[in-house]
Length: 179
Ligand SMILES: NC(=O)c1ccc[n+]([C@@H]2O[C@H](COP(=O)([O-])OP(=O)(O)OC[C@H]3O[C@@H](n4cnc5c(N)ncnc54)[C@H](OP(=O)(O)O)[C@@H]3O)[C@@H](O)[C@H]2O)c1
Image (cartoon, rainbow, N blue to C red; front, side):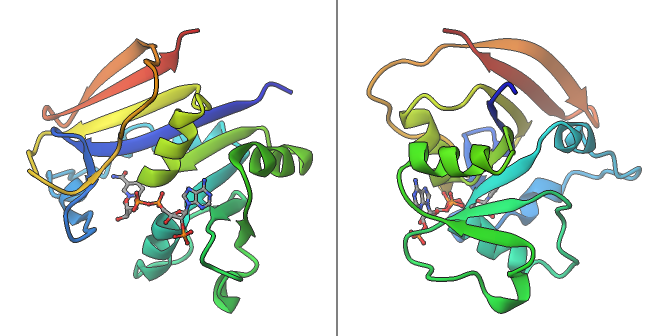
């Protein structure tokens, strides 16, 4: 089975995934009367499981809605000792190096993974473990916030394989790692 680590995320024009207070309400502030999902359902149908950082997990837990994922969720954290009881059947805590974590997840039969959360994506990129990134750009300059990208020790090349415009305002690019 082919192993793939994919990102599907929205950023501000200046590359932030959340504002300086960790808020993401601005992501949904462009009027979307027909509630188009900008490819999310199609993307999620093609993945086996999610691997997300603890902060993103806690953000999702705090949403005023039902648990949004039907696929298994693996939560990266060194500070959590266990998943809160309410979410025990929804998410699994994983620790270790990324290689160890991926081995564990692959061993359970999940090979096509959705990698989510800023620091989490950054740590995967630092080890050149991201194969594809779909980045939806919300055209606001936030000025500061939680960045999608950080420093890398060497250049990673990606090729843009698709571009879409939604709601006449939002650009979505799909990048594939070129090696
Ligand atoms: N714009 C979007 O589409 C989008 C998507 C997802 C999230 N978000 C937002 O982004 C923010 C979260 O991003 P973030 O950069 O703060 O964090 P994140 O990646 O969600 O979580 C970071 C935490 O994950 C754990 N972690 C990450 N890599 C690890 C590793 N290799 N090994 C062990 N633990 C690891 C650590 O938890 P411990 O500290 O517990 O060790 C770390 O503090 C939230 O505000 C969320 O709402 C936005």
